Image 1 (spheres, rainbow, N blue to C red):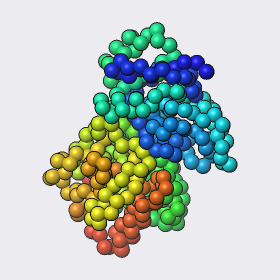
Image 2: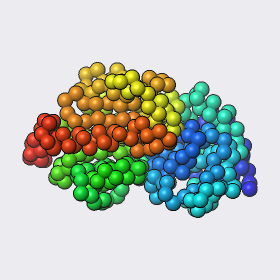
Image 3: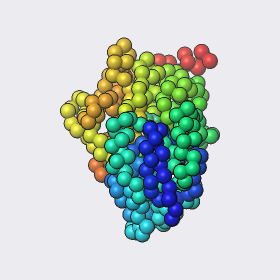
Image 4: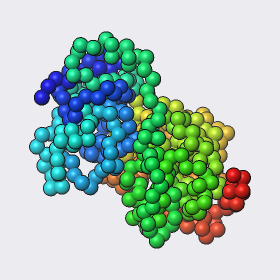
Length: 374
Ligand SMILES: NC(=O)CC[C@H](N)C(=O)O
């Protein structure tokens, strides 16, 4: 195993050993994930697109990689950084080691660095750009490149489905907009019998309404929500015409479409045990999260949205609901079950919302209006 380094944009250098694939030229944001388990889901969650992901739990890979827990087929992260990668995984479902998986999927990794020191630095300075290196010959040149380089903003376009596809069911007809969807969302909908049409990120409101859905689900996805103008336009065209449930990026797009704003968090929420307060009941839920942006509190003042969930650690907004129309969203991930299933009932809430709308208990605008406008 050869030496490998992580260089941060502030010039700090971490020396470790190579893991997984050969290096790429990629510069990306270094973010940390605090889950003690769930590394396979993290590796395959498209919302990590282009990021260098540091795991804070010191031993990663001990239960191997299995066939069941992928969130998508093609991992999108740019690198994985761990303290120690387990070389002899032990689990009856395991089919390969972490190192084998990373190599097979062409994801470079770094192991053996002081991940605590690295994460403390990110917590103090905020998210930073970083680059993996195999030698120190060009440190200054890379530092310069890192300082001037603007990171790509087309991640959603790269991870979204290229074409629509249907996962048939006998229940409610749901259009699921794929901004880099974790398959857990599809699983939750199909388990509830839904007939799901998955559509690409640039679908228009007219195209969605023509499918006559009972409800629309907006998925998670990578990057800055403000870079996904197609999504903001879509939601603007759908609010009031069809029940909507948004998760993570989908939640941020609802806020932007309704006139609110989003902003970057200092170092993001990424982990499996983020406590969230249910504003209505005062209950605390344990949730799985992965986001670097948040809806700005002050921007909601003149919008029809109210806050339904809040992060207990920093008070940031974790959920929204529309005063007038059947639209709600959460910043956390109800499809993930790191242990407790506290948030999973939100999918039932979505089903209820479609049911009530169908029964005429919720008033919508007339679809013809928007269809005629086009
Ligand atoms: N998981 C997500 O959908 C993340 C949303 C957005 N890319 C963020 O980082 O905040």
